[in-house]
Image 1: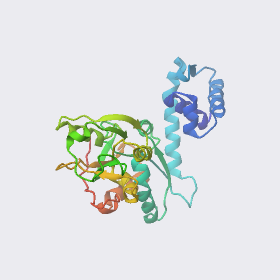
Image 2 (image 1 turned 120 degrees about the vertical axis):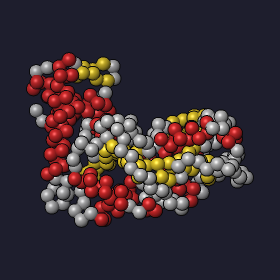
Image 3 (image 1 turned 135 degrees about the horizontal axis):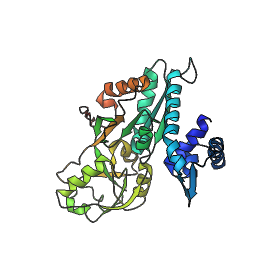
Image 4 (image 1 turned 45 degrees about the horizontal axis):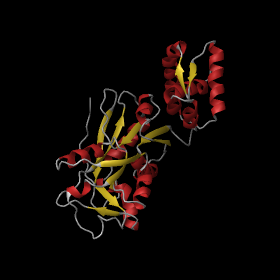
Amino acid sequence: MTIDQLQAFVVAVREGTITRAARYLFVEQSSLSRRIQSLEAELGCQLLQRRGQGVVLTEKGQLFLPYAQDIVLRAEEARRLVGSKPGVFASTLVVGATPSLATYVLPRWLREYAQRTPKAPRITVRTGVSTLRHLLEDGQVDLVLSRSVWHGPNWTSESLTQEPLALVARPGHPLAVPARPLSPEELSSQSFICSEFFSQYWQDIERYLGQFGLRLSVAMDVDHCDMVKEMVAHSDYLAFLPYSAAAPDLEAGRLVSLTLEGHPFPPCAAYVIYSPSRNHPERERFLNYLRGLPTASLLPSESPPQRKECLDLP
């Protein structure tokens, strides 16, 4: 019984299909299937049963799963504690981040952190919205950077910073010519594309526009803000984006920013989420780095973001 076999089994259960599990582990489907089959042969029982395009646990698989998860988690913790290459990396740090933070904010933080840290850890980054919660629960990431607060007994959320929201359109959009502040009612007839639809800032936008009796018409929900910007640049869709994500295209003239008459949009926040029950020194070093950054260096905004107090959520 090997860690690779156990990991293949655990990830296949979590992802629900062999295809997604193989993609997550960066292995061929046939290789991942052989690992699971070898594990089943060693145990003398079937752990997974194929149904349609997915897999489900057998009765024996349900009994075996918590043991496999515990072994994989402990092996990962031991590997991080010892370090993969003595003299090069003291340990590893695995960071999860939602798309807009992973693309436009996290790279600057990681570059500066590596420059400031004499013996920098090996850093792995995981992105995506739907899987980050599972990764944190399973101990496969050390912390998550998110646009939303996570409520639950197993983790702590801290607010790091706020930045402006940008309402963007293509330069020739009817609402952008001539340039002028818009009335709230003018937004009610428009179609919007959004990313990170379940993030806190979208909930804030809906509450904000609700005071005018408006509800946005969301025509498309996509995973990544780069796709949002590409669609907006070549159509009449509008989009709300964190300023850090919109800034490069606004500066290049590919997009324009629209304003609402007499009403600033609600800000967009960034949060760090982690499990306080897991003690990982490298994570603590990175958390301290994030907490100690000057507010003006967190996001590339002409109007500096504001740091908020920590939220220790039950």
